[in-house]
Image (cartoon, rainbow over all chains, first blue to last red; front, side):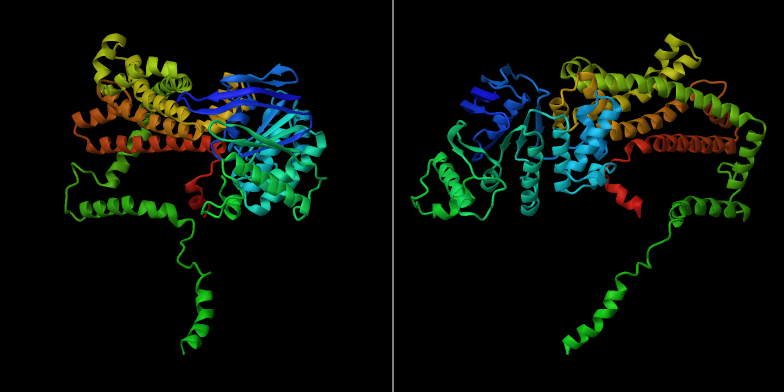
Length: 263
Length: 282
């Protein structure tokens, strides 16, 4: 189990990015963190990954404190961040360097097949489309079989069609080994498609506003009434987190613009 | 009326587009580069033959060629070229090793950068030729002082290139290395070195160029063999053709060694997403 205990983060310039964030994530659960800009969601994810240290509180994974990058925790960034001097297969196998060559090659091939890029194994990253590159990044993170996979706005740079495709693909990959997923996004629809639980954060300083359980059966129908209902709940929570009531019209036609404006 | 014209005009326009008849075939490119020097040489040759100049101080290509062949036939050219090349390679090797190691150390750690870099930058500001008297006092007038001078000349571009390149490696890629828990050594080997390789090759090439430059300086200041000696010898004995022959030998050697560096490193840089790659692919 992943446990965040009273995480606080104050930057050297005295900006308080996070304050008292506590969250328990069950094994195999998909938690999606949403919130307006400046609410510290990426800071939170970086603290969980061990890339940055929180100023207060601690992150526990199965009872052990995470203070630096951990082999049980995988990370997918907003950009693919593939190493341009390695082929696609080399990138996927990056975290398996210490394994025997044969095992490494087999696992890389299997993972590449799993993300549907077997035919791209020997090409350079520069030859991939944005969606393909992000799939390689997913494969690179998953091939080491992490217990927890952290994703920081992983699909935000992609077009809507590719994004929806990769969201389904991520759920498909998740079903293989059921790792714990913590996803940061500013896309409410993405949150509802993916999440078991949505954590809405509020800014200045970043803290948790509300947790919304999404117990719709998967795969989720993006057109269903239940989906729409969940979306409205999340949007309402986001509006509250930014200190404005969705129902009150303050001259900017909040209810309509809220969906588009809150980040 | 205009509609009719447009519909009639269209097929012509469509045909005109996929007809890049202006494009020159592949083999013309090196020839294009040779046009200017070869043309000038030919003009000079003709001018001397026509008696417009006696060509004594600026020998025509045919005389230079004769001198070149004479020197080569006597084995002189090879002996001097070998002496010079040996000095360049020894000095280049020393300079590259020192420049790479120190550049990697200062690039990787800010502490060593602050400790070492100011001193090196101050030393860099000294024109390297200014060291010559000191090197001769310290190391004698034979090979050591020459090789040291060349090594100093090679050291600085390599050091600067490596240090600057490592310091400007994309933080996001370094973070990938951290996320995969690379040790400092593995970080250098698997992230930093491959990332700086393109700039490193460039640094090696400018270092090599300076190596050839400083070997001339070293040999002009006193040598019994080497292409630089041929230069001085030609000056003192009034043989301009020998001087130009030695200069041509320098040009050939310099260009060849640079080309070897480029060829040897090309397989390591295939991954580059280069601006120039589009042009080369054509």
